[in-house]
Amino acid sequence: MILKRDSSLVKNALKLKQKKYRELENKFLAEGIRFVEEAILEGLVDHIFYSSQIYELKGNERVLDNNIPKYEVDEKTIKELTNTTTPQSVVAVVNKPNVKLKNDLNFVVLVDRVQDPGNLGTIIRTCDAANVDAVYIVKGTVDVYNDKTLRSTMGSIFHLPIVYFDSFKEAAEDLYIRGFNIYASTLDGENVYKTDFKGKTAIVIGNEANGMSKEDIMLCNKKIKIPMLGRAESLNASIAAAIIIYEVVRQRL
Image (cartoon, rainbow, N blue to C red):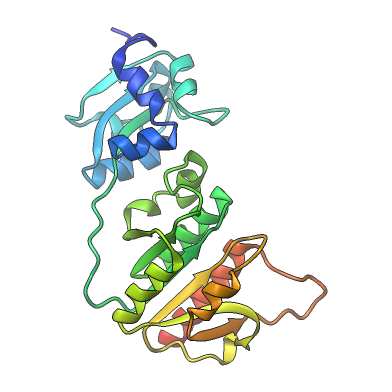
């Protein structure tokens, strides 16, 4: 039996495309076989919607062969639940993960008002690859559970704790209590390749257009910069983040 578009289950799921409902319900939408499988492995899936086209896709058993409640819908409803041109015929309603921070954090990335969902998702994915202990998100940053952000994380959203702060000052205070050095990217900073990152390190990734505010820079106790040898004035935020994050990794190998 195919579930109709006007069913309460579908209507409630569609609401999760809006940030206010994601926050109210503490749930979000995951789409595609790989992403839904990651959510299943984490034990976070509430229920699954799929269309008959899923049986034509390789790996469909990875999301269908389980005891999670599943509802068949038509492909038009699947497309409405997603924002991709060619969705993979499966969407899951997923509970947001519970965040558990370790007491012995050593490497944190602090995201300060980054606006592009692709940048944020890529930063989270890079942090996962580099085994960063946690990502701190300052209010004003694009929603982590925005569909474009989620797709860019490639499932890394489930692999490391993400913590939210109402202000940069609040995040900085938490880091200082934990014994961290906080590194701001500035034009007058120390060359990142000559900086010692072997201690407790928090790297700040600022807003794409404006960088960090002067007030926030003053709350950091270290300044760094990526050397710019050509004529470009700046780097994409996620590229800059990857360069700095992996310099920290290189020093600790």
